[in-house]
Image (cartoon, rainbow, N blue to C red; front, top):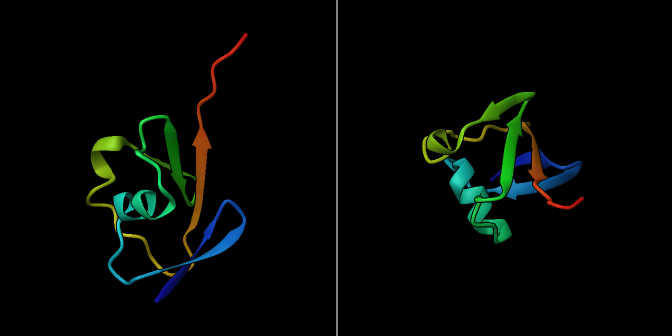
Length: 67
């Protein structure tokens, strides 16, 4: 297992996990979520191939509408 920092909480993941795997584990379809890893935005088209590494700092930002 590897451990990442997900929105300030420790999150264990199987080695070789991608951003898409993480989104699936937490139950998100990823459509209304911005993914930032180590201060870099991961574009939706890169999520399937972006491998998560031990100690990555991952922030998931949820878009909310309103006014």
